[in-house]
View 1 (cartoon, rainbow, N blue to C red):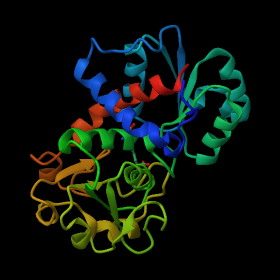
View 2: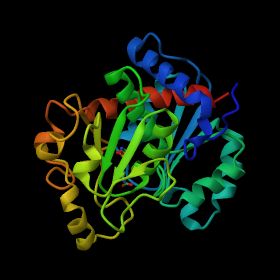
View 3: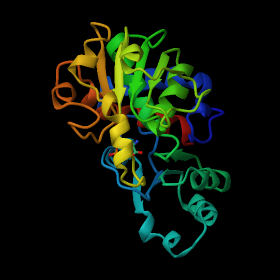
View 4: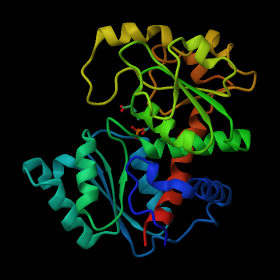
Length: 292
Ligand code: CP
Ligand code: NVA
């Protein structure tokens, strides 16, 4: 038992963050023998109100590997689509299940679900936060560099959900997070990152360069936004300004030629597919922590 009951922004973890990353590494190294059976006899709802490849599959496989039953539900097949409140969904699912993982276009809905559900609720992405992604990012950095303390990670692009979670959890883990965005697309001040608008200055000496899509789920297409972000594309020239040991991170899905060039995304410095794999391991560690 721990004091952690929900995982909504990631800030709930506190001192549990480092042990969680250690456990994720153990689960990765020992698979399938280290596979925990912590979810034996447990059922976990995975509610997706928006598309997903990595999050859905890594949670579904992770729950199954831990002996549990994953129940994947699309928002449009629940009575939510006919006006049932998210609070009632939380109250009812709590009578059947042992945790609820949810991806939603509204952070407030996820917070309301967590307030009403009697079982742990895990945020699988909202427009404001993507903390499960950051756990995998931190696991990837830790396995590449041994420790997170003092690492300089430069996020270049839209000051979005992925940037915000990286700033919050990365700084909590002892890394130095820098976010570089064009005017009007900056991450909020006070999110835990240093804000540097010039991408070349932001990546100078960085141990990792991180980027994400220019247009996130649920956002309208915006030519002006693409134009503003074009100078923030991660390419070989920008990578050359980082540390010699720098790796490249991207949460995926990627749009090669937009926020990142194909040669960088698929090049020798890319840790992007390790990041994607680590979603599985670190989320298993998270569920071990949360589910009774
Ligand atoms: N990175 C991530 O969350 O990917 P999906 O949208 O495919 O789940
Ligand atoms: N910022 C992106 C992340 C996708 C994993 C989005 O919200 O669509």
